[in-house]
Structure formats: C-alpha cells, structure tokens
Length: 304
Image (cartoon, rainbow, N blue to C red; front, side, top):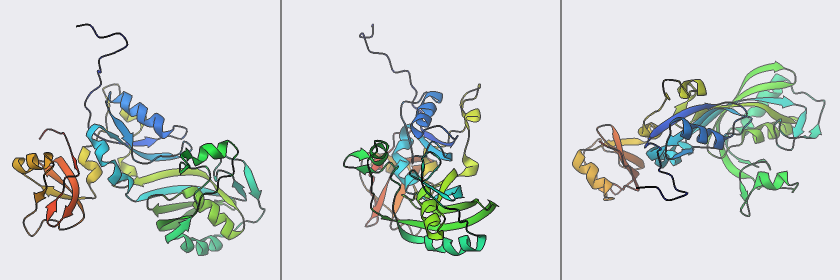
C-alpha cells in the first residue's frame, strides 16, 4: 500500500538506555539530544539537566524507556569544576556577557579559603538573570536578551562542598562544587567576587557528575559516532542505581505492569522511599513504597 502524500514511514528504532555524553564547549543541550537521537536512530530522547553551551562535561541523555527515569537523575547530586576570573562582573556571570562592574582588587588565597564556608550548606541564592527560569511564561534569558531588567528572587539551594583546587594566577582560581538541584555555579562566582570585594565571573565550567553518572562514565562523539556503530549505551536501570531495587519474579512483574501495587515481604525488603522492581535484571516499574507495598507510578515496556 502506498503511503499517503506527506506521510513517511517511521524507520527509527526502539532504543532504550542512557548515554552519558561528554558534551563539548559550544554545543547546546538541545543539539546534543538531537545528535544522539540521530546517531542511535532512536524514536525518543531527552536530557537530564541543561548544560550551558559554554560548559563542557556530563550531559546524561535518555533514550526510549529510559526517559521515564529522568527525574531521578535530575534530582541527584551534581559536581562542577570551574574557573573564576577576578576583577570583572558580567551581566551573564560568565564570558558570554559584557562587563557591568570592575575592580583592581585581587584576593589572596587565604581570603578565598576563609570565604568558601559561607557558601556551604543550604543557602539562599539569587539565580542569574540569564537563566532558563520562567518569568510569566517566558525564559528569563529571553527577557534579559531583549534588554529587560530581570530580577529573580533568591531561592534555597544546597551546596555540599566547595573546594579551592588551584590558583593559576592572581587573577583567577579553580574551584570544585558538589551541590543539589537548582544551583547556579555562575551565581557562586558572582557572589564570591562580591563578598571578596573584587567582582568575578566564570571563564570555564565542566560538569563532572550528575546523579549516578560520573566523569569516568562519559563518552565523546568519537566513541558514539563510531564507523562500526554507536558505542556507550547504558541500561535503563543505570539511571536508577541510587534507588533501592526490589527483585521480583515474572508473576509479580506482570502484576506491577498492570498498575497494581505489590506487597513486599521479607526482612530485607525496603520499607520506605522510592524503589524500582526488576525481573531478571530488567526494570519493570518504579514508585514509592507505602504501607509495605510498592506503588507502580511508572511501568516500563521492556522484554524480560
């Protein structure tokens, strides 16, 4: 039968799993997702947390059924290594913007070390005006690029660690941060420069961790776009490695896939929090454990 005019048969594959992409500087997160979708010829793809074009490092990309696990990865701990240039504050808090304040003052290493503890813990942080946060339905960066004065209210974020790694010169330092969801490294550089009375902005940024995925897991385009076929595809459950796993038999798996709660038995069964059920190592469903039963909020259509 001929295809109706204007319609084309979908020849994309059912590809399920995670790609821990080592995004290069200059590529947008949206472009990265499109590139992975094309490389794997996958029907469905999405990323777990935007990474700025000027940043490099881990951009976890979910394919197919793995997109259902994106919230767990997004909510996981992040880690960044970044360089702060003293003496200049920009309107974007990085090198993409233009200077809005300058100073000849430069902090010594001891002053930087004394300032860092003020940024550790749960603190209030004012997001950069050039951010993806929505204001009345529009992205803040779109309003800022149109010349509008964007004032975003401070919000609580958590920074687990903030360490001084190197002092390449009197004009810059290299820091590493371990933080929770919603933290802006550019805002750390801005606020640290203001605290030290010298101003500052980010000149280089690399993300080294997102949830369960670490820098050593990351693969570049040379591995992914390989002449012998794409490499580096991880399992769907790789995105759930920080969540409790409940092994189940085939009967229980079918039960869960119908959306029916599964009563957990045995002294080793998790008693609270989120968990996922797996049959023969294949993820079946995930959801919260409530009153001794796993509630399958999401189910996976994977063969087992």
